[in-house]
Image (cartoon, rainbow, N blue to C red; front, top):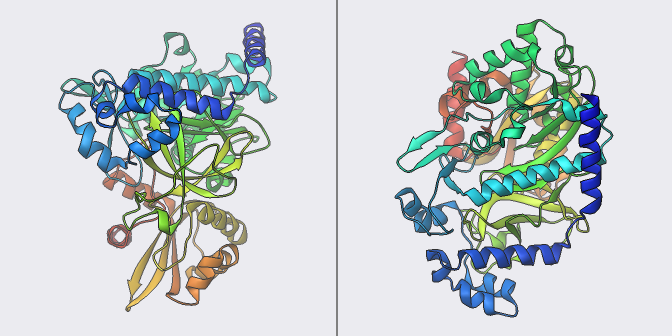
Length: 507
């Protein structure tokens, strides 16, 4: 098998040497041209004059002037609902075989079209990630090992003329035949919809597998590994999978989970971050020495960037029509941007809901800094999820905790605004001390927060609870599974319902 692995590694090296990173400006212009050309005959393309845009000498700017920005509600209410009703050629040529049921945290339910062109795009992006492994010091036999992809069920829901499921399940259901011998837990177990039963089956079968890499959202990967270790009565996952070397993460920030995950390993892994959402596979980490991800510029997704400022966003968290929208060429490093995408699934100038920062313009590398609706700024705090995650890392060290989940809301108490936090951790600490330490850290890290604390933000409260209570809430009110995310910021009304549920657990 090592001979096969050496062959695969050399093939990757050769392929990587004869392909080069595309010129960002040209690659993105080519992507937009192809998108417009293919969709010019759709209802959307006719309404927004794609044919005329293509005739312009400055078609990128013409596209931005002609086509408005969209969030999910506008895209669905104006266009995508026709696809669910069986219409064709709405925002992309043809009909619709799949809809991704988004597990995102800014909406309770989203049905996002996934076209055959998008599935091809996701597969090509996956190959780019595989090609990037040549940049990491991996032995030849790594390329013969199996890949544990912990995602949602591949047993999709049949609805009239289409199927529905989460993007990880749709992608896994469409894996190429040659890859299925590497893929674990396999289609049979991956089809199980009940999370506890799926993990139980994985634990039973785990000793038979030779896993070289893991992929999945950290919180659910961690729960799966804990059960596999417990069921098989071993100390670490490397007792079962000694060749495990790579963990491909995504969906949420990895750092808050590093400490607790590494207790399950006999040795650290190579961690690779990816940016795969229901709307497409947008970026992947391609080199060691950074946690930033390189945008995939030549694969059916056109990127735009809106400076994440008050003047560019309305009260509902949408991009204002007056906002200046930048191309990748125009965007700058170290600035928070709202990301817009236009894709081969028929999303057009679509606000995916994430904020990103360009960390290396030359390499087109980004880091996800938060969610547009998970940005706490009720009384001027201007706290991003990225800043919250960094603060939690400091709290872990200061209080010797493993913090796996947290949520915060700005609420009114006795007529005044306060920030109230719930922290999911592995042990109890003094709540007042924790709140004071967290408050001090945020004041030091964010000048806007410090100013808010001297004015309208009158207090900070925190309660540290067992992390299992977060997962019980998720199971009852959202769903427990490989792709479900727990929100970091809640509106006051949602937070009060969450808090009422948590308090009911201790009664």
